[in-house]
Image (cartoon, rainbow, N blue to C red):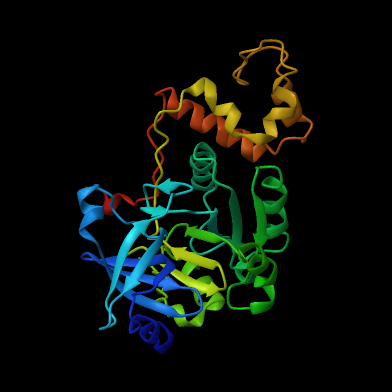
Length: 316
């Protein structure tokens, strides 16, 4: 706890502070108080009585006793709440994809976009490791995803100059980082805030997959009112509770054309006079995005197995 907070705590009446929970382990919570630093706190019994479980990202009221110990006295109303990772008050999600090493899988990105759309969560997409890309590869990916409903950034995490536009997009917001292991999330985190000291994993040379380095959810304050949360990497995402006929609504590229189809309930597969397929043929909708739509439609219809990047030798 900083001297400023400790001094305030020794006053006759304990002072209340507003802060944000950045870490929680075993009932102990680290609360970042703007302008003062981090205070180690416990949740008061009244919160347990009310069955209110503090979450990473919660805005809270805390009180500090004379010994410098803190108590969370109130959890302020949440703007939103994510289940995985368990975190509250998120403004946006940043999905980091490597262009190479590990190999980029568009199906995984498309799933993430759909899941975040279902939670009304704004998304930023970052294509990282441009130094490993072939000529024109980064530009091709930007073209494919320019109308996907997310802002797209291209970076080389080891070069700070390529991170400036992304840094600006993160300023003043709480952002959850997500993406497969080995794509550079921790490297980007360290570039934004060296004090985060995230462990950077080496890429397996044998199978070109990242080693998992993030093991818990934690917020890092990288600037005033600016927080980043690194999350464990993932290899698959499941689209539960989505009907096949609803899938097209999660592809913003289709919106302009879907109303022009002959049938109001057109699935954009084999139906005659489908304006979406016609737009794909005219290259007005990227074929890669349409192919992903068809793959997911088949999966949701029960005609394909659920996509996973887990190698056979790791499957149980």
